[in-house]
Image 1 (cartoon, one colour):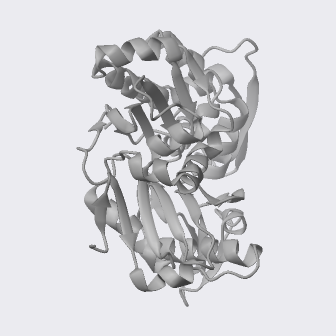
Image 2: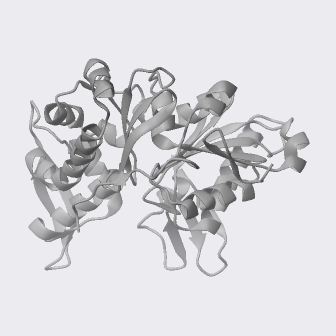
Length: 371
């Protein structure tokens, strides 16, 4: 068999000489996200949940920190140290750093659970809109990090499995997975993705929208971490029952001195509206191309939301108002993709039958109105 070939709709790469060593390894599933990387171990659940950030010494190119420790360095490092995010828009932007990060997480798993040689089977979630080059990059990085077999599964499918949707049934299920770099919308039936849409409007875009609003309206310069904190604490996509305000602190672009302004939740909602509008358009575009029989199923079962962006207050109500479908947030939406990857490992039948379009299906439509 080819070392990189489709098997029942899932790309699988196998290193035959590592099969024996795999007897002593822990099989793992990885949600390789733009913002966070989650690792689940077969039979043990999710064991690692850390930011996808790596701190590097610019002179020696040595890795100084990975994960939470590296994220704390963002915006606070001296000139000789850089804190980088090796994934952008859900795909690899720095191959070498991603490889080192994956290697670190795989070794961490085996060190945590005692004796074990790092030659595991690995299921990795990837965006449904990833190109062949991007898929290959994830595959190569996973093998280079020490995996003996690599399975690539589309994130909306993994999220649907993790959200406990009946993906193998004939009735349709719809998932909206809002991650850090991309929003994946998919309608799933009979173990396959029927219709899907991918947009590069998600958590990171929301942070950038807040940064741009602070600059343009208040002449205030803020960083990504501040924008993320403001989004989590006061962001919304639908009018709230109890509107409030939050202090926004940064540097005045006119004087160069520290400055603090009071930002209302209404203002913040307006700042986020270009991104939330694009997510709504992606959902509606997917529904418009869904077969009518499946639309009837969705009217009955509703739309499930997963990913960190699903926690934005009022986004479920906004989608329900725009689509006229019931919309709900899955349990523990941040970990849905990782859970789905883990369950695919646990259930060999699911891993073989699930039809992920990674090798055979046409890429989903890209819906974007921003310039």
